[in-house]
Image 1 (spheres, rainbow, N blue to C red):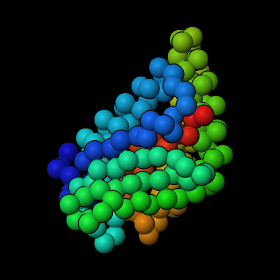
Image 2 (cartoon, rainbow, N blue to C red; image 1 turned 60 degrees about the vertical axis):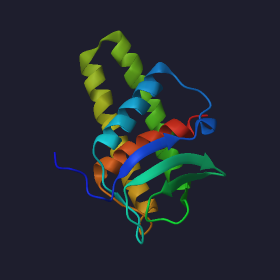
Image 3 (cartoon, one colour; image 1 turned 135 degrees about the vertical axis):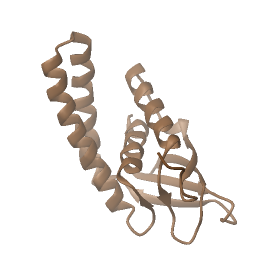
Length: 157
């Protein structure tokens, strides 16, 4: 793994007031996504330079990225509609519930089949997120996947 470029997220915080309920599985997903994201990511805002401190929140059917960096005179908020992601988020939560139940039962073939579907929805969500942020943020697919996970955590009501 190479060192991150200057354009990366150095810290990420979730607006805890946006999260209504949390399961141990959801908390695990959040922790893994945040740790992986900080370990390596590519995240660039046109006209600014990282590294960035990001706060992720939801408000009024929007996902908000509030970025701070030494190159920004004040915090910059990038907001995008949750509408294009809503169906994928709903389906992702349903498949995750099935996955967690399958893990508890120990049925390996079922776990593998559900996990393949879960990865497919996760890829679809990250692709939609990348498209929603086009022109506002540049990021690689792994960064987008991890951010999609965190958006799902915030979106759970």
